[in-house]
Image (cartoon, rainbow, N blue to C red; front, side):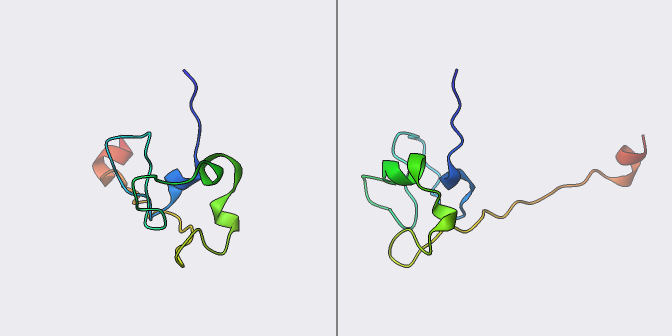
Length: 73
């Protein structure tokens, strides 16, 4: 199995959907989805915007720490 890490996966504007073949986001919300150039050739983080004034913004990650009793064991 080959895994490809797409830069768009780390953007907060990416839409969650059940069909991974049609990735959409706030910049490319229509049925065509994110253009292949953005997924495979261009690093969206290096662009001022992707489309319609919307640019790459890192997704917020929440770190969960273990309770003190678990961490001590």
